[in-house]
Length: 277
Ligand code: PGA
Image (tube, rainbow, N blue to C red; front, top):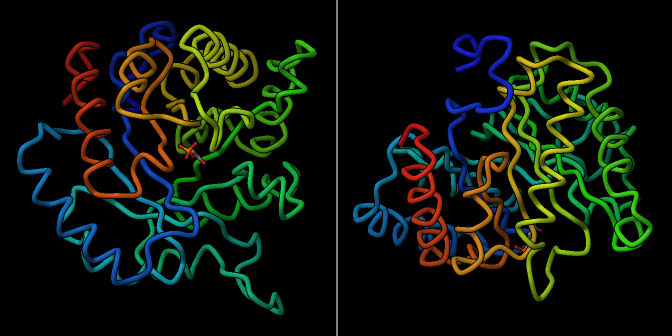
């Protein structure tokens, strides 16, 4: 994909594959993971999955079950967190090489619950992201403003600062190896998602910052997905937006039926947007 994108394509980015992803948080043990996968495969048979990029992020202890259950594809697996070091005296932590060995292709970084409850900072996220890329994992870098930031009118400044810090060590050609996830912190686990107008503006600001700092080709290639109270009812209008390259779903996809419904929403959007399906 990356090679096909030339300088100047920044506006359309028509070759960006759409993503339908779910992070399970601390839900779905190994037995539930096996049941989820079995049901999802039945439901996928009735859907047009095409070349959509699909992945689930189970808890660490469900990764082995997920790796086995999803081995036939097309659903890949990833982790919700990792440590920045490869090994050592870090009790309770899990490293990038361990995630690779467990079958992970992705790792989520900077989720708002990691920032809020575990004291993570974007400086730490930068180090984790470097390690993830070094080991061939696809980092899903969450970016999001608080309600206070939004009210104060500094959402875009906050998002740009998070982006600049986390990707500070990356050259332009590595940017699209990560997936950016716009997850407004006030919209996670909330009653409603951010409005399409709000999401369009923030995704536009994030892509513009990538263009300013890393150039038009990186901006055209990098995927920016939206997460925060996505449902089958509100997801269609969000993923239809030009700068939204997929949906990152929590609660609504903790069941196989819910995830299948979200995959259907993204698949329909891919057809309408004319991106590969
Ligand atoms: P939610 O979670 O869809 O349940 O709001 C989203 C997230 O935490 O990424």
